[in-house]
Image (cartoon, rainbow, N blue to C red):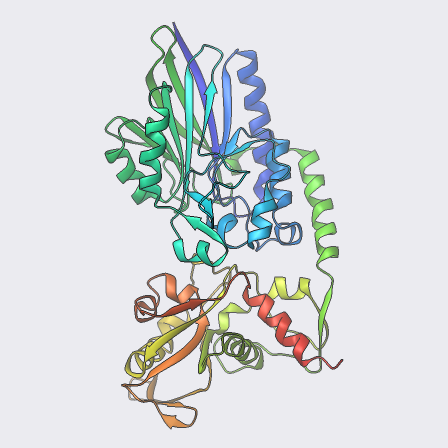
Length: 466
């Protein structure tokens, strides 16, 4: 006898709650349908549900996200980097205190090498027909960042090998929740034939019908709640064997029904969150102006705060990190969260003078200043002009009509190409392809869990008369 089992999955919501009421109603309707058809359904999330760019997540330290997952009766989740490394150790350690679902991560440990009490490496689910599913979970290997926050993160491939060996003799079907990204998911599908289904996130990939690699089906449902993923499993009950699997996605913008109760809950929670964030952190004597492409006072204020916090010799940050100017008068946490919503930390990197000059030249290119960046934690619109503290950039307009860097001074002296400078900046530049010279630097120090808006609050408080 053949039986259908239904897996529904979400990933990388990033607190884009505008789509959540549609998701809730869609999943409620599907649950009712499958109950009528006497078919089992499991609900799974693949991480980055919480993102501190949203006031609700910021004010509740992500606990509102957990409440939303509880309300829909999720069966299991894994965590993404937004849960793992944008919350402090204590906030992550208490994030799932009220969770009514399993948090599955086999590669996360405490500093002492023990599993946190709220984590399980896998979950065994015995279906009504006696078939046993093993649900595994792994998250992305940001080793240094987890270490700075008081955690240990293990290589996910090694962790998978160990966990599969634990479950493969007792499981009929193995499902992996992977917050590693599509490239790693494809590698896992080739190297771990015991895994039947990989449901992925992190790289926001959309696989409308999944991707079949050898025996394994790889699935992914994009980002921001734009889609809900669905995998139907056809199981031979007698042989307890998976005979077919099909993946699909449902666009939420096509859903005409939304859950009014969820909409009302989110509205109330938003008002409550904004009230919590109304705490005054400083008093500004004069307006801090903002121009993404010309000199203005607010980016200079930010870069000075970064340099002082990191005790750097010089500082650099892009003006697009700030979304609005800051008016004079009382400044609240809500103001700073709205203006600087990124889950981005300060860092300090050692660069030789010739390398630093090359970075400065790249940063001042029109292409870079107008870059509309997505990812790396950036929640702004455009990179904007790079501003500096302790560095003066001299440029002139040449025959092509464009500004070109002709000289760089460090604290009034010409930059020494052979000398190493301690540069305070943002971790975004150390993570990806924007500035390879920074990402390849040997010595980098990251400051966590403080985000840039925490530095602004500190600097404003320091400048406020007592």
